[in-house]
Image (cartoon, rainbow, N blue to C red; front, top):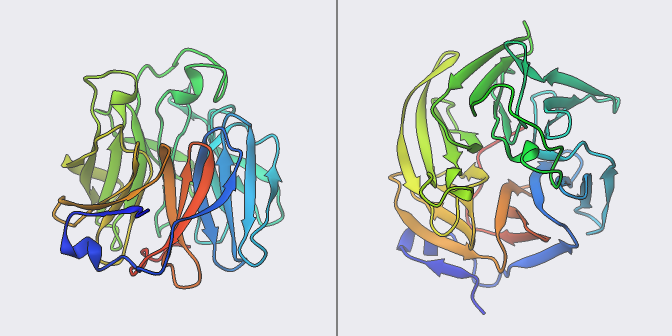
Length: 301
């Protein structure tokens, strides 16, 4: 069975015919937030409804419990100091795991009101933390704790740990979800998964120009179908890899859908890893998957 659907020669060039899609682990309820630690050769990922984080070891291939409870952690990333930064539904916060293992709160409120349930996060080279805040973790007790939104809206935020300031940089989203900076950090791609709870809602990725501590533009870069866009990653050629209902969609820099990696379950998030950044790790509904590609993810911490 071929797991690749090539729609353009540009995608075909990224397929390694002898490399197959591998299932690394199963038994999740909703896998999320894969983050590769190149210096330690392991992958951390979330299992939201099971309220835990898992660790996959590259040398042994074994998966072990990393953290329980995880406060229903969702998206994760690393900062430039190698620390794990996580979005937590239960705490309605963005947290940071220090190098000694202690966990501290970076931000949990905006203008005196609790955040909804931070979803995904990226850290810019100036150490600012950019994250999305849809309501998924407060809609039920399955992925967090059911509650009303205190903010009454779903924004994209920029947090500066140097002075503790939090700025809403995009306020016109229905359900902002995955996000990723371009390699030069001049662009920010943000998914809107509003169709998850409204059949007429948005199911696209928007692209913004990064202007200092703010954003401009925000036009639609691509639409995702079936399902909604979730996690996002970029490779060194500027292709955008998007988590979708039927697998991973790959869009060329001009927004053209050039191919798919078909996964037999809904995909939530993804990241590039391995020593050469040429292995795509895919967190899906019940399982963690991986495949080697003839491309490399952009450099991340």
